[in-house]
Length: 113
Length: 115
Image (cartoon, rainbow over all chains, first blue to last red; front, side):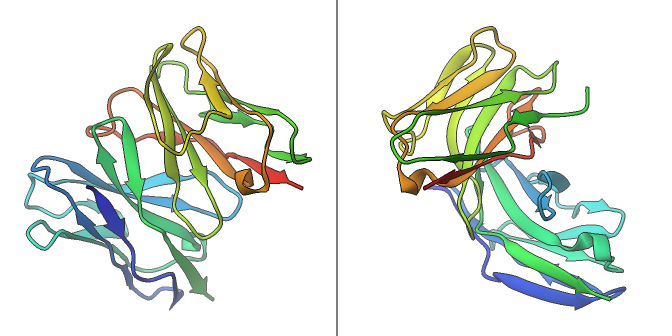
């Protein structure tokens, strides 16, 4: 069975600082993608970053980067130079069968001015 | 096309009533998904359509739930005889390919409160 675990229900970070959100997952698949989605308050969920499991290089999108450890089944998100607009729920997601996602329980991130 | 839209945004209903939600996906997306999200949890998969065909249903989707996508465009999710446990955010998403290869785009959701 596929599972996704986010062990940090809430986190806070000072504006301009760096924060890392953790995610672990379990799967028997070998080729897959992993996703981080952001859900701002009262707004729709949007994709932050995507990692291909067969690529050793960690994905980077501007201030967002991942630390992907395939053997450890770990997929953490690093946000650099945190901004007030980064305040949101962050969900780690694993696509299963190509037709659905398994989501973690989320991490509520607050950026403090 | 401005993205996935859902209607209504909020719905309050009395226990036992039927409710129907609508989702309009991004027009060129042939795949459509429904998820349910309760407070403090991540979204949970309910069902998936490819064009007009409903190809997967979660065990979460009890007999009181039914979803349709009659012309392969918009979709509706109906809940019959609502219960308080149905209170949740119902999210719709769409994608152009399977989610192993591409992102899904989400709507803002319909928040259902059963009183």
